[in-house]
Amino acid sequence: MQKAQIPVKEIVRQYIIKHGYDGLYSDLLECGCSLDDLMPCDCNPYECCPGYKVRDPSGEVEFLIASERGDLS
Image (cartoon, rainbow, N blue to C red):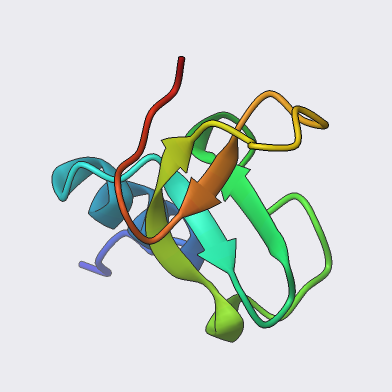
């Protein structure tokens, strides 16, 4: 019997959830995505790291994904 194949995106999603992260971010690419919209772009996912939702100090977007936990209010 063949084992079920799991796409890499689902493996990453499961890791993020299991370890309490909120999504992915990349300082190099200056982007981030949450679990609600994981890997929506055509970027290189090898540059992404798991991170936490934080408030955007500029107020331009609802939140950012960063390496450290932060204030969301």
